[in-house]
Image (cartoon, rainbow, N blue to C red; front, side):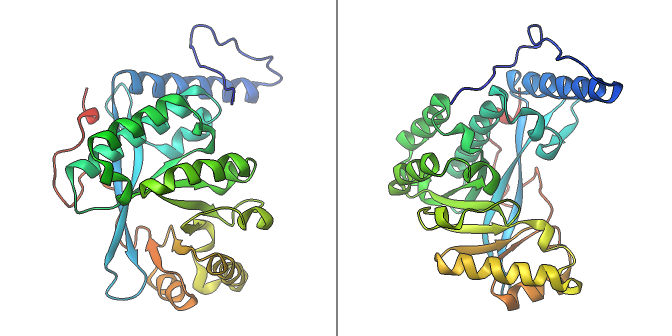
Length: 280
C-alpha cells in the first residue's frame, strides 16, 4: 500500500486558499517534524492504562500501552495530539513499529502481564513492522500469547480482506485482536461475519454520561448485541463515572477502561525497568 514519505526539506506546501488553511498546514508540518525528530532520537515511550473486569471486585484484565513522544523540550505529547497528522505518512507506520517494539519488550521484561497495543490497518504489509514482530517472537515465542493488537473500526472496514488475512496469519502465534472505536464509524456487518476479532472496544463517546443518556444506552445495547453474536469480549473505554461503570456492567460489558480506574501512566505499577527505547 503506497504512502508518502515525509521529508521536511522536500515537502512543498500545497496551494493555500485561505489564512486558516495555511495555519493548518504549518501546524501539521510542525507536528510531523516533531514526531520525526522524536523517533530519530528514540524519544518515544509507552503510557500504561489498566483495563479491569466490569464486575466487582474489578480485577485487572490487562493493560493498554499508549504511545507518547517527547518534544525537544522534553514534554510528553500524547498520541491524540499527533496521530491524525501522521496517519497518512510513513511516520505513521514508524509510530506503529515503535509501539510494537516497546510493547513486546515490556512483555518480555514482565512475564506476568498482558498488553494491548494500537496499530493502523495501513501498517499491514509494512516490512519493518513484521521484522519487529519476528525479531521479538524469535527471542521468545510465547510473547504473542499475551499481546492484543487494537485496530480501529475506521481503518479496518475499508480493507476487510487485507485485515482478515493479516489476522489469520498472526492468530496461530497466540496474538489476539480488538476492534477499536467500535460504533464510531460505518461498520460493515457483512464484513463482521468474516472478521476474527477477539474483542470489541465500544467507542468512548457512548460511555461518557451513559446513565443519563437514553439514546446512548440504546446504541450501547445494540453494539453489545452485535459483539455477543460474534463471540467477542466487550470492552468500554473512557469510563469516568461510577454510575456509568455500573450501568455498563449491567448491560453486559466485560471490561472497563478509563480514568475512573486509572489514568495512563509512564510509571507502571509492576515497577520493572522500562524498555531500552524509552531513553536516547
